[in-house]
Length: 560
Image 1 (tube, rainbow, N blue to C red):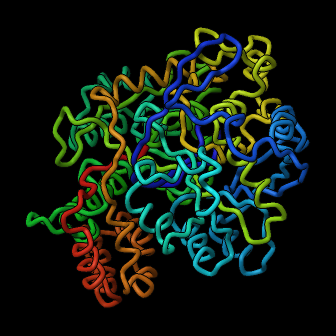
Image 2 (image 1 turned 180 degrees about the vertical axis):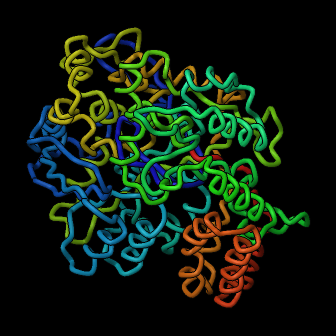
């Protein structure tokens, strides 16, 4: 599922991956000193001593992203000093897929493009590569080791490597950004069900005692039967945010991943399985008994947030940062009403001691377009940003100004920490150049292995996240490195005719859970199954199984 773009945690909705390794030894309390394993210092990188001044336009293709009041902020000044490049950022408002298709159709191209590493956005970039609209980097990467590292085979999910990186007869067009360098760098947004602690206490249920599908149902029913009211209205047992995000994460209790093993080693898309029917009917029961907010799939974010601010939602399904943000005002005025994790809930087919399998993927693919006014300057910029120095500059700000090195780790200066924490608009941090999109261009994500996490985060928030992490991730996490069948089925010859039907599965599921009976719900599901078969599903799934023979395939996947 897709994530709201917010860099402090950077997005993203999503899929399979691999990790490299970045290390560092710190010799100086004031200046990072890369070791043999860390990203190459710009001073050691070919061509970075050439600082011909140039302005480059970068399209940051993430809906909802935004920048500082001036392109020449504190971070931008350092970037210009180190590379000679003035970065002019453009931000997308609206569909990322529409944007990527439009810029290549109209030839209104930036010098550098960066955007989601999945879905139609990725498809649009691959199409542009095949049409010769991007710069081939294969003959240049030897001079830019930080960029070469981020598309090394071991640092890219296997299906993405085949589909987007190594797919052009030796030419290289795409760079791959923000993939976790190690498991501890993986961004875990802690998706799950969270209940207001005071409400759990009122109905006499320990949230950690809720483990199974039946436990969750009975818990929600207890909340409804308690007849609780807030702001003069009944408390909603289970709710979510805009357009149903992310109430359907209960699917993890029914299905390990998007494709299930039929028992003979072959895969079936979960939409065709009995588990999918059980999952649909479970949610239909929640809707029909008034346990799931009937407006969940049609409400806007402002409406959803208002319900939370009024204290009207007992259990929320989403990732924890969104829940903390939405509930902050209510919790401040009603101490003890914090949202706390439910579970951890059972996972279909997973052993109890299995680590959380996170479908983490680097947020971005980055390319230089054929209309770039200075390719060497673009490479010089990107190579600097992908160095350890550039990585920390974009996330933490200017060393010695915003932060210092203490015990080998970046540490926020108190004066700036206090300013940022007290600025409820977030504009102050952006106006310094932090969180404005530069970090989407910084190669492997080393936030924890090389950096020091989010040094600008409110410490109460950090404590809440860590407490939830201990509950929901008792066995730690494991970043998925296997092949994701979705990446394979989209390459099937039938995919173009199959995709319109496949795109309807989400809407059909919502229609089914609001059906008048279980039989009517299953008929809705079966009608689309028939349409999928007619438009090539059987041939496409055979293609998928044939191409995955002998390969490790994702069997378990949780949203990160």
